[in-house]
Image (cartoon, rainbow, N blue to C red; front, side, top):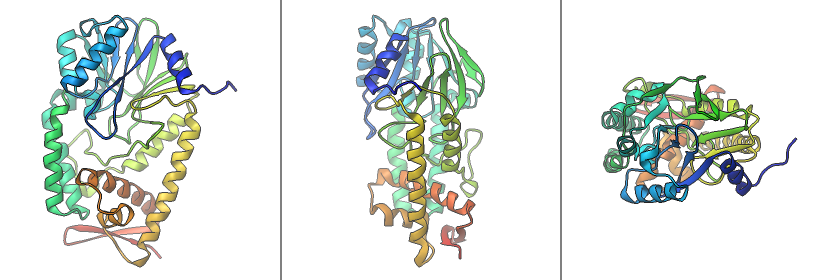
Length: 339
């Protein structure tokens, strides 16, 4: 077995392969987002950063450090639909004339970003009300989301990528692998020859990639039949765990150089959290929002949907195991321990 690389060695090795990490500022708690310049034909950018003048300025400076300009880009690749990864897509595609490559199921979303974002908000509000978040909180969150929408953008996708297809540049080929969970559109790009994975937010070293309950890409979404994001994410992580990767270049933070150990750690954390949530139900049924409050207290309004998604994901795991059951009363779902 080859020795594990440290993060700086991983970045240096990636740079030798012509893949340069450019950390672009965002206004979000997650901090900077990693965009990747691939020196190849066509000159390729993976993800864009948010739609802001500051992000564009820093991206242009980072490109200049490698002797490049926005106008030289020939291909922009999107890993997933979150606004810190697609925000400058419209500006960069227009200025460069570059092709845009993204998962085929994401094409309609990027083609009508404003409408897709509105449908996302409608789905989220219905889901939050159904699981006990007060109406005033949901409306506050919707206002925040509407304000954040300007940090994103869309564009026409000229190179739709099917799961299992290949993305071929002059000097390398990536296998396109759909890895939903963190978002419905998470896509990773596997360079088998160099054992390198462009991972987006699928796997991040310093924080868990929250599996957010999101509207399915193929419809408006029914909160009564919500996607089970954590179960989906676990299946995606299991598939990624099988890859013999030496380097995972993530959407935030340092590269991952021992992805199997990190994935196993995340699985253990998931098991512990599910047991804790099950224990909270010992005294009687609770809504997902009530469980979140018992676990984290009164979190900031902007974190309410994130914590709700976290709780619902673990309740889905417990329900599959036959440990909890849900029932609806007056339009709100509550979960009870079984037995």
